[in-house]
Length: 454
Picture 1 (cartoon, rainbow, N blue to C red):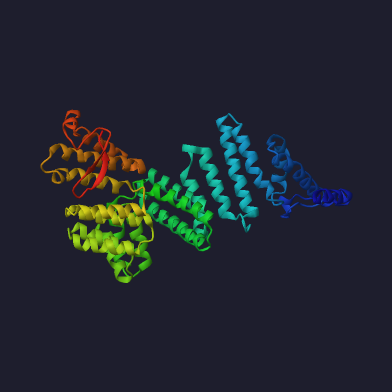
Picture 2 (picture 1 turned 90 degrees about the vertical axis):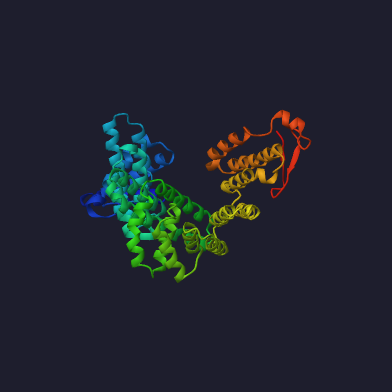
């Protein structure tokens, strides 16, 4: 309605304003002046309804006039502009023309930054993030990652931790791709990853504090994505990280936040057997005892085969840990140490504690199965058939492990196959009064569990 009234008013004065006509792109005003402002508003009123209905073919001509002549008139130019140009790209068969259209789409984003980059809801970093996302989608393996990296680095440098989450994620991705092409970029990629990771961590904490569960889940998805890419990138090899961080940890041994971030990084990429991890953990623990620092000291003690000290620190870590998955891992490490000391009942107790924290922690089931199989002869020292019947209980654990945790499936299947080959034969079952195929049997000794003969 407002557009129609404005068109009517301008139409009445077009004769007097004709001499002063000027496009918005030329005089810096949203609509231009005189006849050109009428032309701008008219074409906005024509392209928007077509674009809203998905009729990009008919919208294009009117949209292009507005885009060229009064680019500061409305955000609708860009909201629908990317859809219109994307439609043109999808319908173009000539590779050269398609590439030209992709370049034009990038210019649509650039022009939106020029005219609406200070928008409070969708500012520059939001716009550039979508620009990069479309670029990667449309260019595929032909993408120039150096170019995209520069776009994204600019917004990350400007906004820091406040950079739009998609932008942080794509920045880390582009940096990784640069490293793949140039191994000398490895250290910079690690720094870029840490910067993106810190930004997402800060935003996750803010969402959590605001009780915004939906936003927190979305941000955690981005964080998990860049973490997984980093862990599998080849940049995170322990020797490289040892060389990179050894001197820095010594320089910043009184900087608790730096030590915490370093420990978290090394733990995430499973570099927990190197000296810099132990050093950072020790310095951090002195400044402020924490679960992650305690785990570092525990692992250092394991390496030195000081199992009592290791269990002490792992136990301490479980009392401070807030992440259920991390706590499960700490309990599992204690179980391994108890297994090493032939304390099977205690080892199983800690496996069960691990599963209380993380029911899908397959390694805990795997360890119980291995312990059952390893102690079969000691449970039944005078009955070889029952000793091999213990394997039924062991196989139960391996089956459960692969059911809840696909990452252990390969090892579980291998052990299942191995122990099935040594189960009591049909003849042995027939001759043994404690066993009957298809019936439950209780395995004695420290195991004390029921299983089924098969």
